[in-house]
Amino acid sequence: MESKGQPDIAPELWANAFFDRIDAAVEKGDIVRGPRLITDAAEGWFISKAVADAHPEIKTVQDVLNNPQLFPSKEDPNVGQFMTCPAGWACQIASNNLAKPSAFDFAKHNFTVVDPGSAAGLDGAIAKSYDREEAWFGYYWQPTVPITKYELKKLDFGVEFDKEHWDGCLVNETCAEPKKSDYTPSDVMTVVVSKFANSHPEEMKYLNTRSYDSNMAGQVIVYMDDNQANGEDGAYFFLQNFEDVWTKWVPADVAEKIKAAL
Amino acid sequence: MRKAIDDGFREFTQAYGESLEAFFDPLLTFLVWSEKVLLNSPWPLVIIAIAGLAYLGSRSWKLVVGVIVAFCVIGYLGMWEDTMSTLSIITVCTIVAIAIGIPLGILMARSDKVQAVVTPILDIMQTMPSFVYLIPVVMLLGIGKVPGLIAVIIYALPPIVRLTNLGIRHVDPDVVEAANAYGCTSWQKLKNVQIPLALPSIFAGVNQTIMMALSMVVIASMIGVKGLGQPVLKAITNQYFSMGLLNGLAIVAIAIIFDRVSQQYGLRIQKHREGGHGV
Image (cartoon, rainbow over all chains, first blue to last red; front, side):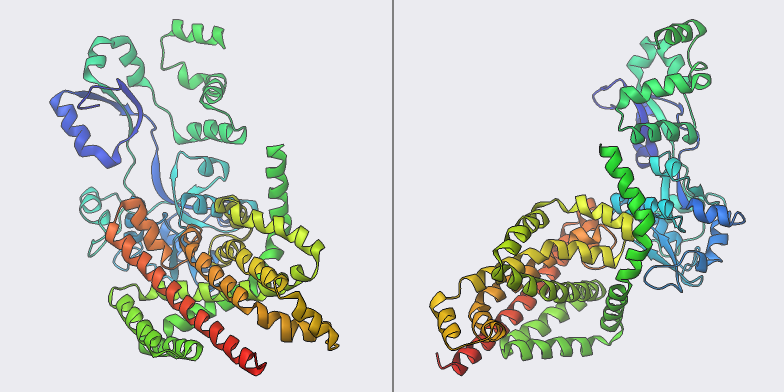
């Protein structure tokens, strides 16, 4: 987009990996960034519904770490199990760094880090824990189908997000002494090429007001997943069921037109 | 229809998942134990043990030196722990595959009906893309060693079954007739005539089974099996060429050692048998 001016709009850009490029392009005047699209998109550590229901007192990562017996590893029931991000993903580095002795110290709390190997392995393990009402503790991100469908509960890290430490150390494999930090917030935004933004003020008004939360997005994608629906079906489901969300994004007369067309 | 199958499967996991898991528990204990033994023993001891086994199997000093050098290089390059995990799961897989495969192959050779039933099943096992059955296995048993083991065995079992069957069926009918004429019981005929004569083919099957088991290491690591597969996966997703190559070569080294030892052993027992029968 920054070099060719194409496409005009990136409607949902997960920006964490390319902040540098976006900032540079905004500065040069090539693109315009919209507000946060998904207000609470996040990566983090989650626990399964079964254990969240049985132990409502578990709210933070520390609470989990104090109870390894609730998350027994299959191979050694005396040890708690944390399922990290699949091998080779960037998130694995940060999650594993946070598990080190200088941060959350999994070893001292008798927790072991298990690599699910692939997204399919991770999803399968979560699905199994839900179907069988078992305990599960691991990495995931929202909005996604498993988070909503399997009702995973996000844990509070109990500490502030330390941006400098995160960018400077936790995301590097060589991070010598990782410290505790909340997970980096996921910035999901709309990015528009400047030329388009300047010549389409009406459309920009819509793009700049459009935003929703993970819970709503989750319900739509779970509907799509359950019914093996395509994008169009999902859009209809959204328009029919979340009127109070989208009517705020468009002028009243447009909203009426959409309602009439449904 | 698809939804019905999915829902049916979900109900099945809910109803039987736990008992199935309990059924596989002894296997898991064995796997964990064998990995612990390999990981917790001091490395020189492990190398000596493996070299000793290699010598017992092959009686070849060249091979023993090769084994020692290969494992020293693996250790030097920091792949020792992953190699031990892989070694343990591959050893167990090979043993299980042989224990199931050879009897099944013999059964197939003795009955055309069994062969007619088993052959298509083997075809399915070999051609079905692994992820199709990996995910149901994960839903049933979770991620980890046992599901990985099952996946590897599903893929690695067919060659030994096929080649055992083929080997026995290809034993010269004149020889079998002669055995019958001497009044051999069915068991004597199998043990003393058919299996010894089918050995080259059976050992080719063992070799193929080991190779296929090792080639599944990377796939198995996609459902959380520890070992050399995980660094390979990491290397694939991040384009770490050297990391992928080194771990890949470690898998190759294990494969070659397993293969040479088993082949030499096979040759040796065939020589002995042939000598014993005065052929």
